[in-house]
Length: 148
Figure 1 (cartoon, rainbow, N blue to C red):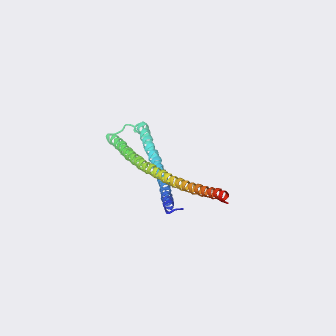
Figure 2 (cartoon, rainbow, N blue to C red):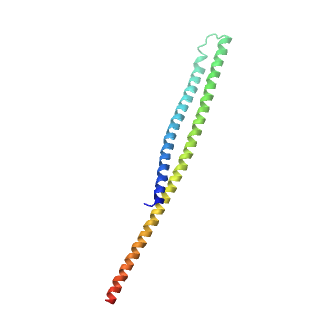
Figure 3 (cartoon, helix red, strand yellow):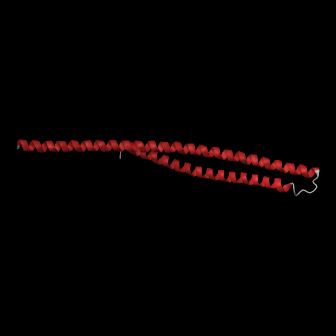
């Protein structure tokens, strides 16, 4: 194997490792997305349950009870907003990793193409050499028969 092909293989192998790393990071990022979505859904469900049952549980609410009720709803809304921001960040991270993965797959494909082209060139060169040797051999036989 020539130095050039060895270099191509080394580069391709390094790219394959980077692809595996990117795939692992994408899987982790997907897990973060799933967790953030689950948390957001739980918060929204909790808020909905609190809206439907929380106020009903207050019998003859005082002004302080209503203020506490509104304050708690505001805290839930803040938590929903923060969880929503976390989800957006998780999606951005996943998209960044996916773009990296696509770039690496493109590089891997390019290296595979270079390896294939170099291999085909070597095979063609070998075939030409073999054909030349066969032609020379045939010529020798022909001339040996003709002049012997």
